[in-house]
Length: 111
Length: 115
Image (spheres, helix red, strand yellow):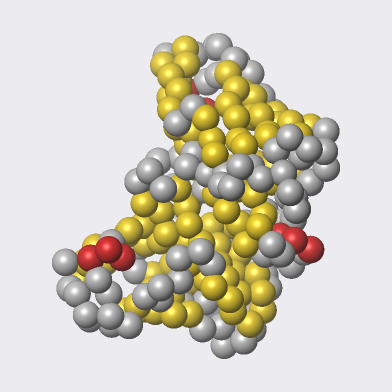
């Protein structure tokens, strides 16, 4: 994988359901993976920065896992709420200080 | 309040008219960066700066200039804007760290339209 890819591009989920989506990134020369949450008309806000293979991080109902050997990360949202509606971005650190972002997964929670 | 500020927030201009978008942070961060966001393309890095007087190209630097004379400020300069630079621009900063392990703090964004 040459670029950072996220799937699906968009997702509609019923309130209360759990969901997950994927970020795929180049596994060679891995440094770190960032996840951001971006609400409409606001700025992206950091969720997690992950560096270790097998790492799992959690913030409230949101959690993420990391597999650096195969080059993917999953973001999970448990019991989706309307306020979870946002675009979720992942970014892989390229070289020493560059960030390469995926296109994002746009999540809509239906009440 | 810790924040990254950008000005202006919205700008409509014409082709060839030089403009500067300012970015300032009050968190004493060494690292600052500019991104543009276009539909279907995600955030793409334009330039970044690891510290005062240290800047480097990101993935889409053509048509842009930056300077870092002070730690808190990182202006983005478009010497001769063209319509393909119409975009949403974000400035971001973060604490120093090996290989950018630290989260980035984003400004509110500047929506630029070049006619």
